[in-house]
Amino acid sequence: MGQDRTRTVRSRILWPFLMIAILLMVVFAVLISRQIATAAPEQPIAFKHQVHAEAEVECLFCHPNALRSDIAGIPSVARCVGCHQTIANDSPNVKLVFDYWERNEPIPWQAVNNMPDFVFFSHQPHLGAGVTCETCHGNVGEMVVVKPIISMDMGWCLDCHLDQPQENVARLTDCLACHK
Ligand code: HEC
Ligand code: HEC
Ligand code: HEC
Ligand code: HEC
Ligand code: HEC
Image 1 (cartoon, rainbow, N blue to C red):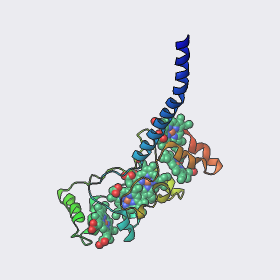
Image 2 (image 1 turned 90 degrees about the horizontal axis):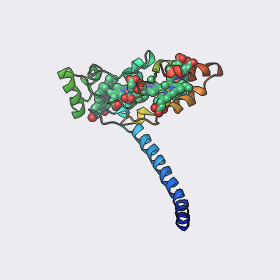
Image 3 (image 1 turned 45 degrees about the horizontal axis):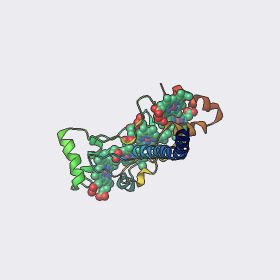
Image 4 (image 1 turned 90 degrees about the vertical axis):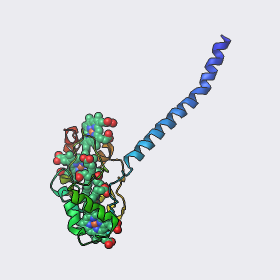
């Protein structure tokens, strides 16, 4: 009897600590997964958005498919060479671009934003509705290295879809709009 009492007393004291430990672990896991979701990958060439924005090259000059298809697309080596045959052609980073061009190889750019395969996303309807690049990607023109500004999770998509004109909300929050 006496032993049982001490055991319950002891577990009563331990419980709060255990709860706090579990809570801390959960908070930690969430913070780490956010950090992974918003980290920038290593790129094969130090490509700087900020330099190109300062030179007034439009987003859509390099990512024209955003207007008409699901993907925005990454420019081909030919598009880089088109300008760099004459611009900054003695810079070491630009010479790396010519190396790919001469080997006739694509530059293996690493994806920054990546939806899981079970999610359908398309740029075209968003641009058609006037949502700007900045809304989802942040001010890329001021970034030296592009990285995601937010974790693009389901809650984030739904927040904006719920905010649309009432007559469109049912269609935009239908599971099958994003999970085909
Ligand atoms: C001169 C061509 C060029 C211009 C102009 C340009 N981009 Fe890019 N963009 C690239 C290249 C190359 C990559 C892949 C390398 C990288 O991620 O830095 C890229 C990557 C990106 C990515 C990350 C793609 C991913 O993998 O998820 C986003 C977002 C992006 N650009 C948005 C923009 C926006 C917004 C603008 C206008 C402010 C812009 N870009 C202007 C060439 C360009
Ligand atoms: C409504 C939010 C939203 C808007 C607006 C948006 N994007 Fe994206 N973008 C995304 C998401 C989500 C992904 C990841 C898609 C995937 O992995 O399938 C992405 C991926 C990309 C990529 C890499 C993959 C690809 O599709 O080629 C580039 C480049 C890009 N966006 C550029 C742009 C540019 C440039 C604009 C403006 C013209 C723009 N985006 C507008 C949400 C958006
Ligand atoms: C519309 C013309 C244009 C296109 C297309 C273009 N660039 Fe540039 N790029 C520029 C200009 C302008 C500068 C700034 C040059 C300067 O500051 O002297 C620049 C600068 C650079 C630099 C910096 C040079 C340095 O000293 O490090 C790199 C690297 C670069 N571009 C890579 C690329 C790559 C990779 C692509 C293709 C994805 C590309 N550029 C497409 C116009 C362009
Ligand atoms: C900032 C607001 C915003 C964000 C964030 C956003 N969307 Fe949208 N989405 C819209 C608007 C506006 C439309 C076009 C509405 C229309 O056609 O009536 C749309 C349309 C769509 C459509 C086409 C639906 C149809 O029936 O034509 C899909 C699919 C979609 N979004 C998926 C996504 C996914 C997946 C995400 C998150 C990764 C996302 N959206 C994030 C605003 C947003
Ligand atoms: C506007 C787009 C959109 C709509 C509508 C939507 N989802 Fe999602 N869903 C996403 C995105 C983006 C992800 C991936 C990111 C994440 O896990 O949050 C996702 C992930 C999921 C996952 C996987 C979660 C995980 O952690 O792996 C499930 C299950 C899911 N959705 C179910 C649903 C159901 C059920 C509905 C309808 C009630 C729905 N979704 C409607 C965009 C959407």
